[in-house]
Amino acid sequence: MSTSTDPLLRVENLVKVYGGRADGRGGTKVLHGIDLQIGRGETLGLVGESGSGKSTTGRCIVRLTDPTSGRVEFDGIDLATMRGRPLRTLRRRIQMVFQDPASSLDSRMTILESVVEPLHIHRIGDPAGREQVALDMLERVGLVQRLCGAKPHALSGGQQQRAAIARALVTSPDLVILDEPVSALDVSVRAQVLNLLKDLQAELGLSYLFIVHDLAVAEYFSDRVMVMYGGRVMEAGDSTELFRAPSHPYTQALLAAVPLPDPRLRLPELPTPAAGGRAPASPGDGCAFALRCQVRAGRDVCVTDAPPLDSPREGHVVACHFLHEVPTLVKESS
Image 1 (tube, helix red, strand yellow):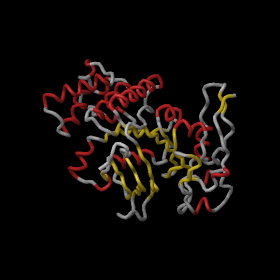
Image 2 (cartoon, helix red, strand yellow):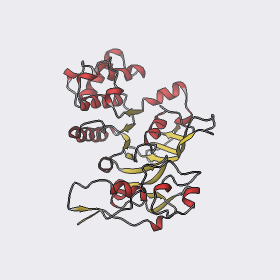
Image 3 (tube, one colour):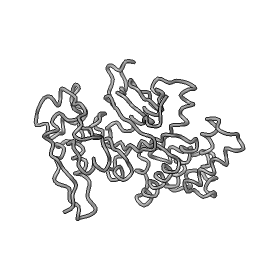
Image 4 (cartoon, one colour):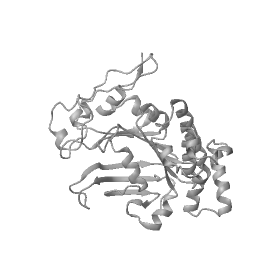
């Protein structure tokens, strides 16, 4: 039995292999032993470029995709091995908001019907009361009642995502996986949706796994951040500290590519990836970033051995064989 001080979600050595045999041999490994924790009421940001394994991690946690191996412990219960009715029952406590609200909402249903549906599936309340619960949640996310009878195509992108958020929250979950929830929205409404999610978290005590590729959004929205590349964790730590002083060459390269809107801010010159675009995971069990890393300098250990997560400071972990050679870079004012 978990206590209030235990993490709500604990993921240990999560592996996902597509194709191949049932034991994972001969297929394509996209997650290489992911470990993470999310506390109650906390937001963990999962960042990295496309193909890094962020969405696969989220889908494995919520069991939309079955992990090949590893442990996904939610409130003391291992989700990775659950099947049937116990899994369906527990799913009401773990919900997901997807990137594209237009495709995640049923075009044949009205907005109200879409929000009522999870209550019906999980047999929450009675038929007469479910509609009122759904209406209350739609009002809470900022959708006026006149839109509740509309189909998704009649709503703007921001309104569609608000409806998707209402549908995810109507079952009173403890954990919500946000898979790029604002990347498909206009810039003008992204901040509105993010602020709504923050307000709902404070009001309802939610925990978030926030999957995102926009580093500025990750810094603003997350309590802690985990940086992924090639299906492995490169760096993780407190959001403010990680963005102020990134320690992994990949994190530094990501930050170097972000334009700074304030000309008074200056980020010291950072190492940039080698030419040739995103490389696949290195051969064997080496560092996923080895083929692009400037710190590696041709040393074979980066290709042959996966670096362990080292801790340069409390609450901060980095996967690099030559962490002591990585420049110390701090975002500073000019």
